[in-house]
Length: 225
Ligand SMILES: NC(=O)c1ccc[n+]([C@@H]2O[C@H](COP(=O)([O-])OP(=O)(O)OC[C@H]3O[C@@H](n4cnc5c(N)ncnc54)[C@H](OP(=O)(O)O)[C@@H]3O)[C@@H](O)[C@H]2O)c1
Image 1: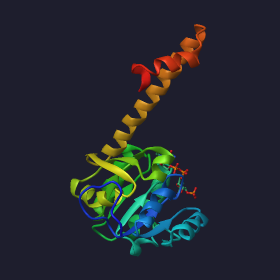
Image 2 (image 1 turned 90 degrees about the vertical axis):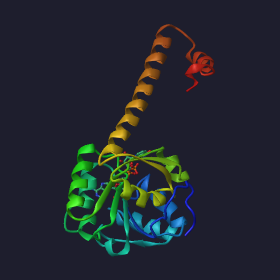
Image 3 (image 1 turned 120 degrees about the vertical axis):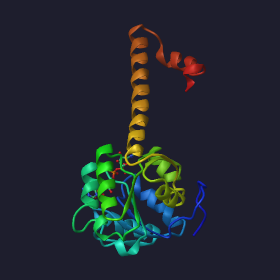
Image 4 (image 1 turned 60 degrees about the vertical axis):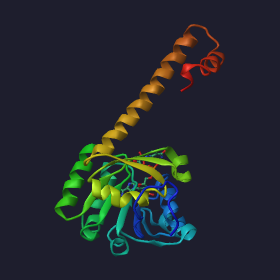
């Protein structure tokens, strides 16, 4: 096992399961394999899991539950709330197969409500749940330079953090759902900036200005951010 790229204290977990090999999950799981962790992957479309194993080694599982005996830490990056519930709840789900005392880290940009609900269900089963949405886009996932905003218990966060270090810099924001709420703050900031920029360009165009020139000039001033 190699040292994480983004250093924090603690030791990474050796056996991990990664669920959801989309644009983000595929390279994120790849960083764990490159670090020589024992990785089992699950993807709804199994062919993608087989492709990942052919590229990175490790193992693939047919259901989230199937990988349970092969992991001590669960990581997931899916599309939305419904996807997340479909792999955590039910007979073939991750929660059904996880060993008591182990943790599930969710990187999906999901709602704060689902994070609270899953944290409660996990707690009742003797499991831990950390909501951990990411920022940094596809390039951040590929380069292992994501930022992660986490919600959950401090001791659980410290336990999982060293593993997240392989593809991100993670921070604990607060208790369950705090990570999802911080991600919403992030999205509001981005949307606000894009809206402001759009309004400014529209104003300039309607005023007859040469906007490429204006943007070049103001981009060398305070608007450079
Ligand atoms: N892409 C970005 O730049 C970016 C940046 C920051 C955050 N995010 C967030 O990261 C998350 C993942 O994004 P992505 O771009 O990787 O999405 P994506 O490429 O669409 O991948 C979604 C993954 O979820 C799986 N999935 C969808 N529905 C499922 C279900 N019902 N049961 C089980 N698995 C299911 C898909 O499996 P299949 O292969 O079978 O479809 C796929 O592995 C999203 O919440 C997104 O908002 C994305």
